[in-house]
Amino acid sequence: MKITENERDAVYKTIFSRRDVRGEFSPEPIPEDVLHRVLTAAHHAPSVGFMQPWDFVLVQDDHTKGKIKAGFDIANSTSAAQFDGDRAEQYSKLKLEGILEAPLGICVTCDRNRNGPVVLGRTIKAEMDLFSSVCAVQNLWLAARAENLGVGWVSIIHDSVLRQALNIPEEIEIIAYLCVGYVSYFKDKPELETLGWQPRRDVNSAIHYGSWSKTMPTNTDKEK
Amino acid sequence: MKITENERDAVYKTIFSRRDVRGEFSPEPIPEDVLHRVLTAAHHAPSVGFMQPWDFVLVQDDHTKGKIKAGFDIANSTSAAQFDGDRAEQYSKLKLEGILEAPLGICVTCDRNRNGPVVLGRTIKAEMDLFSSVCAVQNLWLAARAENLGVGWVSIIHDSVLRQALNIPEEIEIIAYLCVGYVSYFKDKPELETLGWQPRRDVNSAIHYGSWSKTMPTNTDKEK
Image 1 (tube, each protein chain N blue to C red):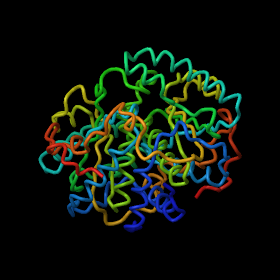
Image 2 (tube, each protein chain N blue to C red):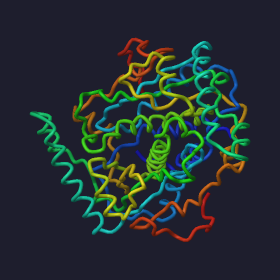
Image 3 (cartoon, rainbow over the protein chains, first blue to last red):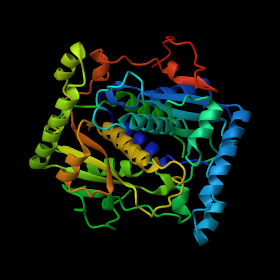
Image 4 (cartoon, rainbow over the protein chains, first blue to last red):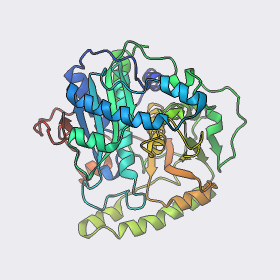
């Protein structure tokens, strides 16, 4: 099946305009058919040995969101203490999650025992199953963007908080907690870039030819 | 920036027709501008604290590919021995990589020390940087599909083989080795599904409402 140039450009538009959303969620509910399309796209991620180790726990009620938000607040205050000086001050002003504002939370997991202990393609690199669930996260994120839905990945939270709030068994790995919803707008650039927290690397500095550290000259400004 | 319905459908077409390619590579070289677009898309993956921990080592010469193929062969024979009976016979007939046939290999890595020890968003969940590099793999894979390029992830290989063949320093983590090239065709379904190695799960069995194990009835055949 051939992808046309217009279709290709739509994929690039989606990839380049995807953002980690924390502050612009609207409470508007997500229609069931839209959510089903997004989750079906996540479910069509690549997986090692066609293992499909992921599950998606949907969070809509305020009580559960409150528990998760409380877990974030605790984890974030210990995290903030790891930064010094100007960095600490800047950190304290950042909005890093939209747990209560987003109408939907999605916890993405990985069942490492699915289909037994020996999985095709996981025999050498044990973390391949975790990576499959991360690919599902990224498919979900891009499908959501294509539906004009924002997604924010909340990583500043202990797995134990999500496990308890969502009744997730000990043997299931927690990969991501995502906040999902329509947004007032998508920022032009990642917020951490705009605020000067971290610059965008020149893509050419990330490309090595044939061997590590054989890179092209940087600052050629070829990057889109 | 709004994504239209046509653009959304192009994203879904790309997601649903993406395959793990092993056997259908053509030797046709990948034009430089196409490769640059694909790598730029990978470089625009989400990353924890805008860390951009990935690098891309491009492999084009046959000598290096030969070393990697030899590493695969060794890893694959020890892997094959883990399967029994019919499964072992079926495994031995599978083509699991296109290392020599694909015109390009790309090793995707993760520099966990980039930007210092304290990274925003990695303070609690240490593997977030590895997961960022996996998101770059999935962006790369979808961008490649949008360019009608096939990608195959070779996971049956020891990191040490890639490290030595590509001169990758010890402190850099190896995430993926990808075979990339134009293909004679894309299969309709994942090969492991078609061959009966593993069935496609019903997407509804992966969705939990509010709490683990509260799923909808399965076999509703709502899945696309």
